[in-house]
Length: 341
Image (cartoon, rainbow, N blue to C red; front, side, top):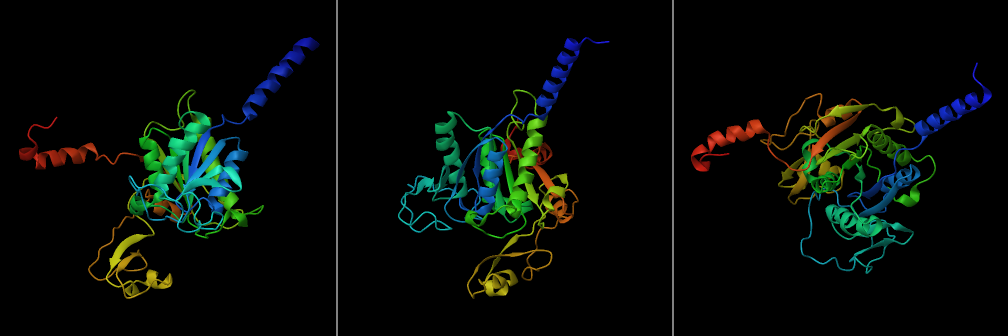
């Protein structure tokens, strides 16, 4: 029989072990950005949930909705005072082009493109706050999905690409629901919090499984995730599935000679007799003679999302061709290239 002192010691060790298992994962320094604006309900819900999980988070995001701007940047152009008020009006026209939200000193804005705002978070805010780059960049979560070939145009995804090319792990997160609300509309039980919890869950899993002393993801790697549209209480029940980016997408860009010929443009009130870009897809046919990309792979992220699962796509920053394609092109151009290494 154990003596009382031995039993107490054993009990103490057991309790310490259980406490260690229950302890939260290591806090991360996170830069949070998006392409919809620093005032959106989506980014603020995620900001609050990441902080509640114990992470040190700063926001650096655009003043306006910049969807579809991709990796655009205004090179060598000063960011001057704002020509108009921010998207939801918390910062007035004439305010500095780079500044802080009047109600939260950890929320920064940039009157520029998504990638400009994300880089401000890396190169200015993170350095001042932590003296180094963050442990993680999170972009989103976006108002609407970002899947397949449209990702080239996505500010949400291009934030990820620039971050991982800097060697910083990054996650781009999007939600199929497109309700555009200001953060002032957030209240307890808001659906935005449920979507944010999905992103936090993914980060916690990455933290839990990473090797000690190693970054959250392999060098040069990020994750693109898309959350299907849900109603209250559903988000937490969605399964995660491995996916590949593929080409399948809800938004196939098409140039129309007259936007009035595009059902999507007409539906958005932009159906005028002027040329411009609109969208087609499997349901809305493009103009005659236009062929849109087809992709029925079960692994393509848009198709995974249609099955009401959360596709998790591994993304690399540099768009390098695969070796098999390199070899084919080397053969085609052998007379021009000479002896290729």
